[in-house]
Each structure stands twice: as structure tokens, then as C-alpha cells.
Length: 194
Image 1 (cartoon, rainbow, N blue to C red):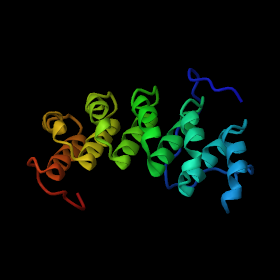
Image 2 (cartoon, rainbow, N blue to C red; image 1 turned 30 degrees about the vertical axis):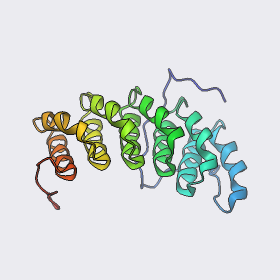
Image 3 (cartoon, rainbow, N blue to C red; image 1 turned 30 degrees about the horizontal axis):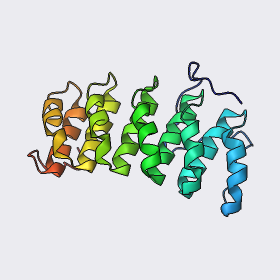
């Protein structure tokens, strides 16, 4: 399969939801499943590639990092989104630079997943990219950037988060408030059930 970063196909699947089945999904078992998952990850069937990215993330095997990083160039936004999600679950410095680049992906879903993954990894090196993502055209991306900055807890984020308090999207301003609270720079505790 050739990767084509200029022609996304389909929409990104919801994480945690039931994906459509193609009949070619990889089976996750022991570590011996890695070759099968990698074959699916780079095969022609888009649904199988998404399923493989998800399975690799759920397995959490650091050996999958270089392959998931390569999948961030997949032609399918859904595969790229799940690869970013998986990289956030596995973590590590090798994923950081590619996830930072993912903040500029043409798909809002991939940008959202990259921001969330960077928050999970928790590296302060991600702060400049996440601050830039506070100006993303997608409200969910801006919200995820606020959440990630709160998870990281770096004081360099305070000014940008304070500015995000006045974001036109309520979810963004709420996430900015909660991030400021977690950093210890004001804000109110998270309001559960709103």
C-alpha cells in the first residue's frame, strides 16, 4: 500500500464505539500477534488498518511505535486518528515529534487525537505546539489542547489558557478554566455533570 498524505478517505471513527467489521480484523493475542497486526496496519483494507492501529494501542507494546508513527502518514484520516490515539497510550519521546506534527494535520479529528495524545504523554516539550493549537479552527481541537495543557501542568501555558477563557465555544472556555485550576493558576474546580 502506498501512503498518500493528500487524499484522505472517509471520516474518523469514534473511539470506544463499535466499528463496522470488514472480516479482516486482526486478532490480538500474545506478542506473536504483532506480525499479523503489522500486516493489517499496512494492508489495502482501510477498516483492517484502523482495527490494527486500535489493537496496537490497546496492546501498548513499545515495539509498535515506529509502525504507528509511520501510520500517521496513512491516506485515511481514520487510520491517522487511531495511530495518534495509540501513540498516546504507548507514549515515549519517539512519538512526541510526530504527534506535534499531527497538530497540523488536515483532519480536525487527527489534530484532536494528537492533542489528546500529547496530554497523555505529558511532556513539557509539547507546550509550544499545544499553545498554537489554542488557535485551531476546530473547537474540539482547541478544547483538547486546553485539556492537554492542564494535564502537563506547565506554567508557560497560563497566558494562553487565560485567553482561551473567552473562547466563543463553551467547551473550550470550560476546559481552559479547568486547566488553569489544575496548573494552580486560578480557575474553578471541574464541574461534574454540567
